[in-house]
Image 1 (cartoon, rainbow, N blue to C red):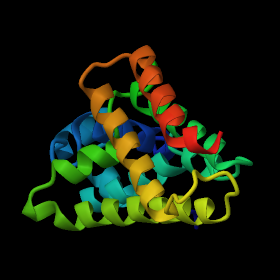
Image 2: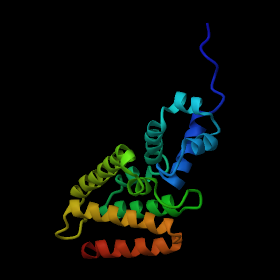
Image 3: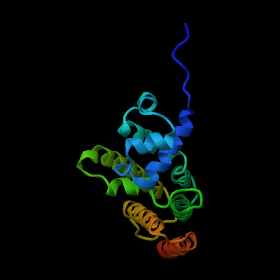
Length: 195
């Protein structure tokens, strides 16, 4: 006997729509009604396919970090620390100020716009960001081109501080050209001692 009715929607498309909405409005700023409307599904289908809002958001985070945010992991494969940082900064500009994405950063918005009821989500985002920063620190520990006397942990923290700043500036309306100027200056400043 065949199972239940087939889904009348594509879960991948629905997830992409949820990602875009959360990215634009943040976790707390997005209601279930807005999600079902954007995803073009009803609440029963949302719960059946993705779980509750928190579970859906965790799936959205997975999608964010492995699809539009995949540049961050890929950048770690670059041959030099300078190239790693360059790819991270340029990737952050495209992610947060590109023509095909909402301006700003999903994870930055989610950390700063969560109230007490959403603390588990905030902690989830922080944990993922800390893991990314730790991966960058480990990559810097292997690099031969770090500036003299530079602590890999502090440099990784500084790079992520710049990336967060790029996201905030993008959300504030700064253009890609303006953000490229910031990235160029950051690279020259960070690696002037090693060139």
